[in-house]
Length: 186
Image 1: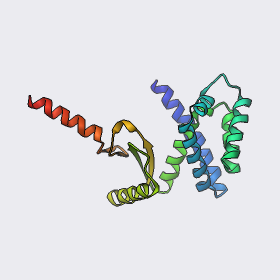
Image 2: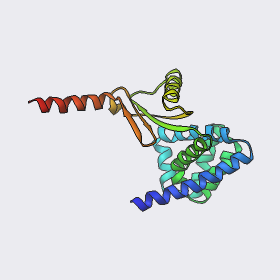
Image 3: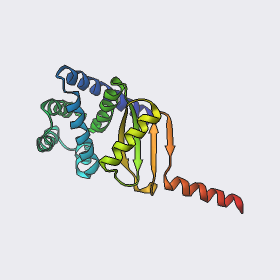
Image 4: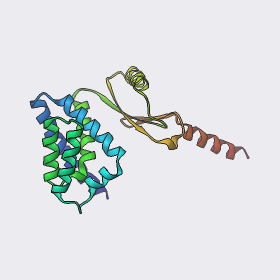
């Protein structure tokens, strides 16, 4: 399992680096990042899309036909479309979510940004996300790229991961601590 994950990470890193180099050459790093973030959201929101990119039973041509329609509807840039075409052609579409994450990490790293993975119980609106980003920038002392995710199981609050540090102010964690403290009393 670990070798499978590291193999996928290696594939993702190579593709992400190639896309970064192409984006830099065409001065389209931000456009590509925006396209990939949109695609990342679409993949997260659609079980059918996840099945399409993961299934080895769907032919390369069928995958590309469907993905190409989706990319045109999303008005994805030509560079990103060509890149996804190469990934599909090479039968690496299953690795697309990891490639996207690797590209966004590489972009942030090269810009001197720190990435913060923030989990909330409900989707944060734009104003909340901007305020959170500003607060994190002040606390960390560097430009912060925030990756938002939603996990209703945490009930409330936030879980913030920056590098190897984690700040957990979730209601679930607080309730668990309270439960453990009460067990210790009796």
